Length: 288
Image (tube, rainbow, N blue to C red; front, side, top):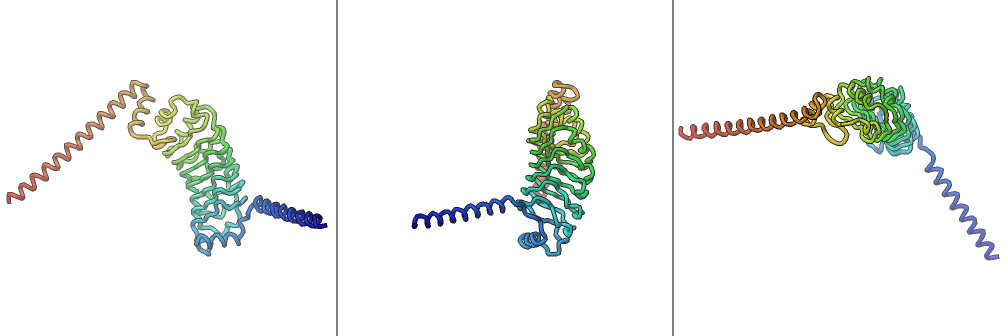
């Protein structure tokens, strides 16, 4: 009898343990909602304004949200942080008409919706499932686009970048972008303000011979490519190589070094003359 009672107690305890575990699993799996009550709580924690339209930033990162909701009152937002949630799209921001910076990396976003505010200047959708950069052409103020570690596979999926006249920084590294390397050069050369470009980790890069020289020579505004800056000597040599081959590059390198040496001599002579004039003035004052 005693053993039967113990067995029943153990069985009931085991059931309670499993039920608690199932409830915990359900709580973990269930996505959180961006409810007005939760927004109010987060605003209080972040010491923001309770007049929602006065807030120019809002941190909603790593909260487990699966969609953007209830932000209609946040019309004054300029920076929104949505990193590390479970978002599948970026709908729900049309009321944020002053939004400048949107950080939505590390989600499950598949595309860029046409409802994003045209005021955006910075958009980060890295580490998402984005396979096509559609609807970016309408973001006329966009200056920085980060879409590394996504699902981009073709140069055609980047086509709208041609119409982003203000883009200065583009990060597309570690995607699966492939295609005609000459088309890639033409695409980025058509962007008049492009200063920083990150394309390493894409198959199309390895298909372009002398990739770094070609890109630098073709994009006059480029100041940073992949892992390092574009210094004046490298630009001079790349442009000379593109115009006249290896001999022209060697001549350009030699001329650049001679110009630098001449500049250093002029600077040294200037400082020497300045010291001499100062010494002469001091001696003249001392004689008086």
